[in-house]
Length: 150
Image (tube, rainbow, N blue to C red):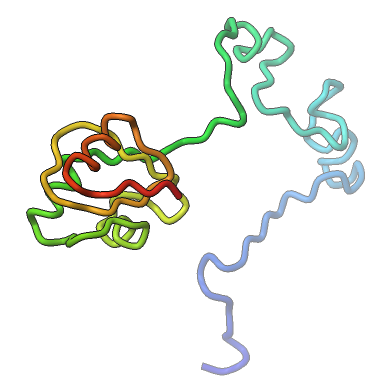
């Protein structure tokens, strides 16, 4: 190998020989392969998302309904039977807080947590969460535990 036979790696150089808009002599002057008139022939053209050539777009044809509350808070629900199972498995002892919930992968670090009342809780636990249902709070306190709202 020497300087006379060096060449770039395969696929690294794209040589598109079609040079458009460089005068009539090139054969690709004039309209520069864009055709005559219309939006696509103009400079600065970019098709809008959902544009259907002037036909009424699907986005506007389909009827709208309902309401989307932009201030809605999404809570990650954790049921009492899930907590009882973790106690039975020995993964939690006496307190359930955000660190324990993250460690057991019941919720993500940015999730708001709500304890739900499905199942029964036999263990005495101090549970810390953002929200509790009335049945969950009653069940935790009935088992001798404590429900702490964050």
